[in-house]
Image (tube, rainbow, N blue to C red; front, top):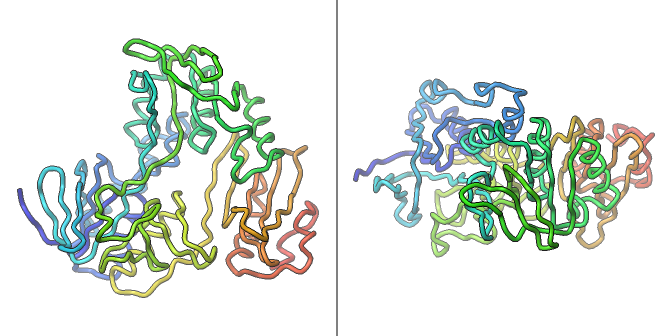
Length: 409
């Protein structure tokens, strides 16, 4: 067991943690910085794992940072190390190998972990949760000898798995519990458009059902559903949500609700402890509420702000939260606040004949958020309108596909 002092300790080597380290180093050329991660690799682009699995990019193209980045910037990258406990009161972090770091400033950027099935057979070979590069490569190896795949879940991960398995030549069945895709922010027309795109690309869909048992001896051979269906499969991809990695903190020392409570500077309730990325329940000045936003671009923005503030600056987070996914060449984008809070009006851009669909969320005459299916030209204007909180006089124009939203800028 050894104990070391660091000026800046970052737990988590993803986009939030790595961008924070880079932001710190730009402002503090001499302070000691270390990133502790339980992964084996430097920063790679997690949203691109599906493209790697489909053979669209090479393995080397996944890596956003190479080892020389850490060396040149005097950032110590500690891989395959799990921090199991943080004492915010003592400013110490305890690793599973019993090493201890004491720190001046700490960033928690530990991200999330896949929610795992709690059903019979869930531990059989051939059941996968796509989160890491190691997960992706294990799935790729299994896919080479597979013919039939089952995807569990209708979220963004399920969508990636659907495309990855199908493009790789497998028969694919997607099982979701909901009546339509993304019913929490898409209406039925939008959800049915997503369904149409999937069916036209060879995905067999089962709605309003769920798996109750994974079949097989040592390795998966199929599944059984609550609705009585039994389906053969060689590989199962599970995407049923993400849980946050918060176990290392003591709630008596740091305020935690759904995530770590932080302000718009990403400072927690504990002095010199910051949080960024998926685990940060942050005060968003654009949305005017506290929330969690788990996606790559948000984590990068968080890291830059957290790092600047850890190094002594006074910077507020000020970006429109957004995330995107490609669905057979058609991009779905969610931006801003898409909650149906009291007083929300939704304006529809319905161009389903062209595989395009949009929902624009407005409160008090101001655009708060949007869901866009293959309406890329609207993304820039809407992001600006959300960020600047401009009042829209003629709201009905938002539903007119012929109206250019740039005219509102």
